[in-house]
Structure formats: structure tokens, C-alpha cells
Image (cartoon, rainbow, N blue to C red; front, side):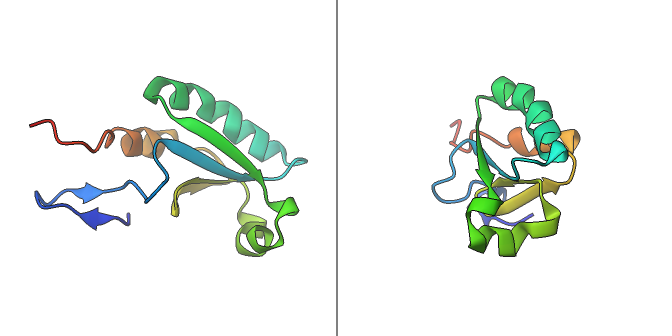
Length: 103
């Protein structure tokens, strides 16, 4: 998992500007894409995250990058899973937020 190491040695997973927003690289006609978004919605709601769905077919640079991996779930530039929702991985990732100090 990528991210910066903070002064206390923990890994910061929040990508610059990503906040609490998932991005799903998707295709309009892709049933796996629709299934992933549907399965992600309750997890996102539970943790207060937004979901942005991007149709790669409308963006040639994204289609070139993600093409056969779609659907892909991202937080910033961090890939969390593709093809199917890895619920355990996403829940573990979300549990690292908020990243603010509790001191």
C-alpha cells in the first residue's frame, strides 16, 4: 500500500485532494461495474465517503490506462481493488480515516 510515513511511523493513505471520496473507473454497459458500485454504496455511507463514477470510454487517456481492469476502485491514485469489490480490504482501508491526530 502506498502512502507517506507520518512522524509516528503510521502509513498515511490519504492521497492529496482525494478526501473521503472513492473513484470507480467504470463503463456504462459493464454489469460488473454496476455490481461493484451497488456493493460499495452501503460501505461508503457507513464511513461517510462519496462515490464518483467515471466512464473510461468518455476519456481516452483513462481507457488506455484502465481498459481491461474495469471496474477499478480507487482512492486518489491508490487502487483498492478491481473486477469485484474486496469488501474486507475496503473496510480496512476506511478504518484508517480520519487521519487527524486525536491528541
